[in-house]
Every structure is written in structure tokens, then in C-alpha cells.
Length: 93
Image (cartoon, rainbow, N blue to C red; front, side):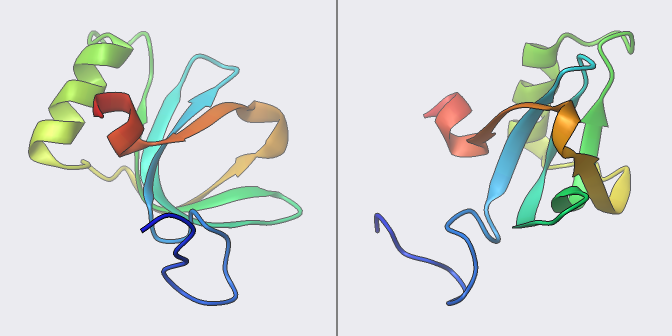
């Protein structure tokens, strides 16, 4: 349903699993909660470091198949780290 907000009073992405690309080269996958003054707040976040062996694409395919391996229960990604943000299902749509 387009335009449907999972929890009224929250942003459209609230509760949606997102892929956040960082300017550092890291990729963050987690449930979007909200935009704060400090950055974007995500829940149950997996973080892919490009020096970790898997490529970004391999990491996302694995995450899509098996679920998020959460490295952080809650994580605030600073605004200046955010290079891009999409729904996980848009990556594999």
C-alpha cells in the first residue's frame, strides 16, 4: 500500500528494513526508526565493512537470504555518514 505509514505520526520508513550506504564505505542494514538531530536511528543493525572479505553485494544477498545478523541493537548513524538510503526490498525488487 503506497503511502501507508506503519505507525501513525512516524515517517514513511518507520519500521521498514533499509540499506544505508555510508560515505566511509560501510553498509548498514536495519529497521528504520527515525531521523534525530544526531543522525538516523536504526534498530537491529548489521554493519558491513568493505575490508571484511565479502563484497557489499555478497553481504546484501546473504542478509536477504538469512536475515540481518545484528551487530547493534540500536545505532545512530550520523547525518554526515549517510550517502544513500533505500528499502531492502528495492535492492532485490
